[in-house]
Length: 85
Length: 411
Image 1 (cartoon, rainbow over the protein chains, first blue to last red):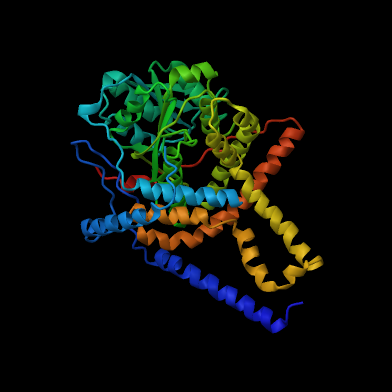
Image 2: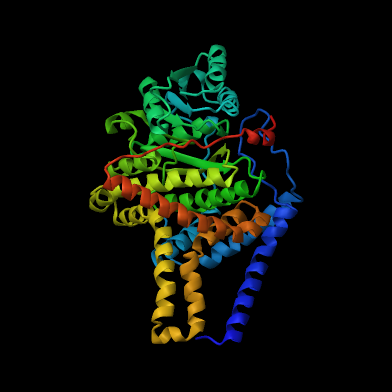
């Protein structure tokens, strides 16, 4: 049998871990800052579909930064075999 | 479990690689193939959303003389039929089929079969009543059929009412993992991409050759997917071809919908597993992926079995190396939640969609994972009982749609 004190510390540690893991989720639910569903890609010349609640700041700059980052990640994983057809 | 772990990680890395490349888009310049298209919209008590999709059908950029829109009013008791008829009067290419209470309400497959009989187009496209596609969706979907090896095509689905509540937000995350990573990777790797039953298209001649939709299966889309692959056809996935959907908004509706998916998927596994493994039309990797795909809904049941057997075994007769309890923690954590690869998929999917804040909700997916364990177990138990007593209890429980997604659309 596990020592009672060790078991109690273990249980307490697990609970703290779960709480820390869920804290960002609870924060996002309470104060949502996510941009919401992505805008549907509409290439028609008509007025496109728009989402009512969009909260994106400096989207273009962010996308440029993300593209560079994705490129770096892809370059890093290119050492793995490419299974694409 | 290990094979699914590897599978998900391979899919995620593949999707990351694919993120650099953009998909071929249909433009006026490169559209050489524009067949006549029949759009089927099965609808049962969808008065809150049917008007939205029919209005959207009138806004599609595909030539109207090459479009036929068929609304199957499946024994609705609300104003669905009346709303559809109003659109039909204003637009000649929209027709409505009304099914009576006696003949209707037995499931989507039956409604689609009725609609298919009236279809005249070379290509059939299916939309659920709560869907909202991009305007050029027909050009994008039909372009692929210029290749005679293509039997069906699937587009991407995005949750429209995502900000509504925690249920819709978690469903949206699952969709991102499934469509941004999983389907995309399977298409890139030449594996089995799934026809989702909506926001997709297929050849009418193939459906007729197959004898229509199988009304005994709750997951008629998965069934069609495997029937097509077994015939040697392919199903490309177009991740840039997009359609909004309305996600379920309550845990009760979530349970009912996932129960139907799990039971239907298991029915497909019983029906197709042997054929997939023996098929001469499938490559080895397609057979392996088909095997994993068909059995995916059984995995949560195995997790439950591992809990039931593992915990009492540990306390009744712990083996020598288990007496070192630090090993117990990671092993039981792994067997508790299966593997973290699906969450990794969702994380990368949200990142590729520039939705970094949505990643904060990923730990909550553990709750949907736990819920799905019980859903899949119940589905398997019910299926087993129905097989034993030889009674097919395929009650189609319709997903309710509130029309709340309308507030997120502005034209």
